[in-house]
Image 1 (cartoon, rainbow, N blue to C red):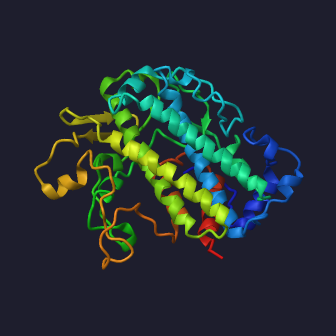
Image 2: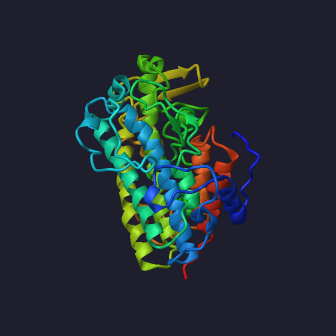
Image 3: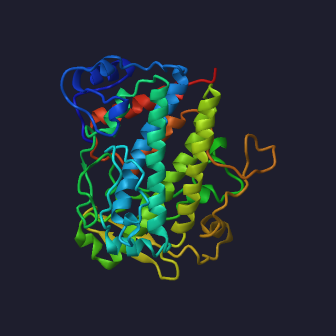
Length: 404
């Protein structure tokens, strides 16, 4: 991580950072970013009070908004490069608003080699990516508006939605908007253990179980790009396949996190309406996860193992055909490509019958768990110390929340 001299160790230091260096945009200017200069009354009032909500409920919603901002940024990158089939020009986003710009997205034309490689997973991949991006934009915009309707301060969230932290270089390949990003997609270490975690019938991370088998072990070692960095990447036939397959598993990794996060934090909220919000958005994340979980299973289907070396990241990845049994029944059950419904597993206590559930849903440390998982994934490579301290502070506040 790039280090910085400004350390935001707690809520009070975060407020000082907001007051000394930034003017946060108000409700009427969401998506237009931040202006430097003298303090606005909005920034001067920056604090962690919950307005009309309890402090805990506000902290939970503020962290979820931050998580959705991060998702909106990474999905925007995927969408830009996967729209070559014309999806971007059919009006899908005509009435939608990108939270980082305050405007409807404009189609880029996409990257044809990348889109074609993604369609090896499913011919409808461009449409699904558009839909997922649309959903994350909507989650961000709704949560922002709801917080502000309740008088909750969103000054630090505007730091995330504005341009201040969007300094990570993204793709320069055809189709990319070629602008600063909030998240990194070119140096990822993708944890694919969700694959066996959801297929296991006798283990549950909430009960302390660990050691889940990786679907693609080499993706969890070294750094891998999930988007073409340049047109050179896009026109290397084996490399662009590996990049698209990496993206497919990364889609599922991202969305399984949201699938757990909403029910985890819902157990800590106090207000019935806030609970309704979490119980309504959370299932849409689960829908995303199941779609991507299914599509990732098609990576390299019907082909011998694909091994590709990336000279830029000095990494190697191997994709095998997960539709072909290995001959080891215990392993095959955990790796089977089309076993995408959550297998019943122990829940609450091993004395109860097994039950098909989202896992994990343990609420202790849930928000910080997401920050740690995203950090280990490499999403924040290139970000500043201020960014990491801000995100850690938001997560700490959310994890302190208690049902009243």
